[in-house]
Length: 274
Image (cartoon, rainbow, N blue to C red):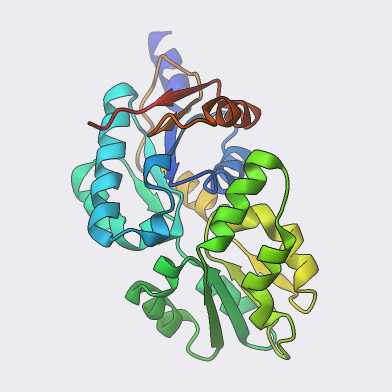
């Protein structure tokens, strides 16, 4: 009987997702649809928001510190770096320091190249992501036959964070971000290369009616986790409460706490990284 209970618990992994803000909730949403019985932890590193303006060394240092601190509190079955900018640089360091599976989010170049009819693709991402050599390597490997246009923006990350907290979108500011593509004659596919951006997908569709496909990595990442858990059995855990963490208690803490509760997290805890 004991073995049966333990085995049943072990089927419920504890998955940590982290980002600089709340954009990674789009990845969390896709994963929880695929793994509804898992336990979830989410950390937004608001003390260092946005990541797109930070150096590679800082991103690596923050990644290791955040995962280490949370791993001391809860046993982790997997870590999802729910941020494209961070994923382009921190994965090797995390994999060197932690034994559980580490999964990142990278721009969906391959599926975009496969689905585009015109073979003209737009990569909408942060400045940090579009300038990484890793992205150029993905394009060379999976989309050498495509024209890939890039827009690197920090503004759009801030627009999404504001929408999450106020429910209002700054349409004028949003339109300015995507203005170069509004009359593009051949662009038919846009990669949402930041986990924040699916949260304004409906607005982007209105501003870019010429684009047939908007692609984000959530579903593919969920499938990847399911596959990994076949080889890395999740740790059983007594505590099942879904917990959100932040790295700084800002004036809007009560508002953020309410938002995280709406997403299914029962508590918001300030993570002390000192």
